[in-house]
Amino acid sequence: MSKHMTMSERALIEKFLAFGFNFSAIAEKLNRSPSTISREVKKYRLFTTRANSHSENGCARYFDCTRNAVCNSKDIGCFVSCKKCHKHDCTTICKSYIPINCKKLEKPPYVCTGCKKQQSCIKHHAYYSSRRAHTEYLRTLSKSRTGIRATPKELERISSIITPLILKGQSINQIMANHSEEIGISEKCLYNYIDSNVFSIRNLDLPKKVAYRQRRPAVNLTRAEYKYRKGRSYENFLQHIKDNPNDSIVEMDTVKGARNSGKVLLTMIFRKTNFMLIFLMPDATMQSVQTIFDMLTEKLGIKLFRKLFRVILTDNGSEFKDPDSLEYAVNGCARTKIFYCDPQASWQKPHVEKNHELIRRILPKKTSFKNLTRNDIHAVCCHINSVPRELFDNKTPFQLMTGKDNEKLLETLRLKPIPPDKVFLKPALINN
Image (cartoon, rainbow, N blue to C red; front, top):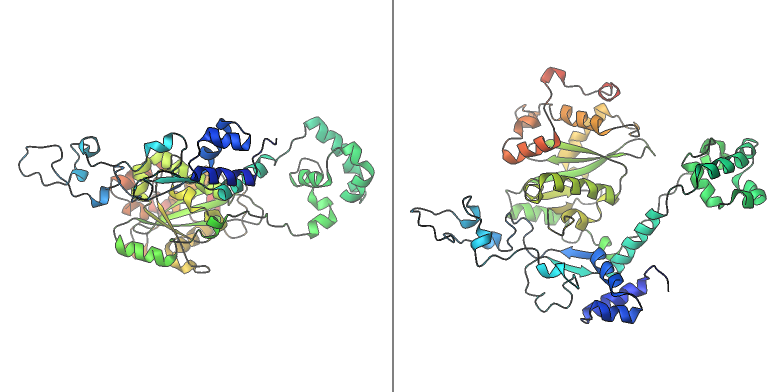
């Protein structure tokens, strides 16, 4: 039997979980070990939220709670709601406390499928989807098979064969027809090695290759991912801010450099202060965006992340089409709520689009981001946020970032204002 699990096997796992089978029974049906089934479910389970994702103390009843004096305090005049009290932790003494995360999900079967209380339970849920699991598996498999697997000696040997022939004007196909056994790799693999610049020859030495435009890689999306906008449209966003006018709103986008320059900038701007965060990513993929979110969650803590990034509005770029990975932390806790602008409607997030003009003064269009470093982007971020804004009575975003939460963010990311006369918004800022 193949070591790799097939789509049909994953579909059976999903079916048997719904019937209440344990891992041992499922393993016997599929002729696999129980630990294999256990790892499969735990690795690819999907968390969904039933409780309010912005609970500040981890209680599922946080926003509906009106209790006070839970601690039996004898202090006269104590009218403070227990959930706002700083003297006592109500979660440790309140009998009505319900944690958002269910402890049952830490034990087999690690999902809510088959649980009798799942309809009425207000905690976060977890489910196993065979289609989603198989799609994630294919992505991981494809990623694991990329890169150079030949040793330096093998590459040198192959180069000694193909280089003189290519310089004579021969095509890769012609070379492979006469020397395939000597080269020892496929024609496709040879093209990939040339793309990776492991030989002295380049794509410029291949006339036909230069004439072809590089194809965009195919993206495998599940049905759930095609419906990523469900409940997250711009209309849903407007309704949400109407119902929650005090929520912190962040607009998010990406800035790309010259074609094939690789690196991309992730920009996030706070509407209330016009303060923009800029992060350097290796590419414009969902995994890179998730890495930035996980980094911020780890540095700031889940509670502070929820306060600062309660609502995020972004566009429909492929790098943002996995909202679940952004809305939930690694441990399954909800950390934010993602909404999407209408297609071809960038004006619905005007703050981040307007601030991109300042980035383009330093990094004009068609500029390659290949040699940019984190220190470069840190400098760009500090200089841009030190520019006075007419919309805010000529105050800078740094001056508007007041309060403990904002100060903690600046301290964590080591962002400091630039003196007015030293603000520099030209390409020389990076070049120097």
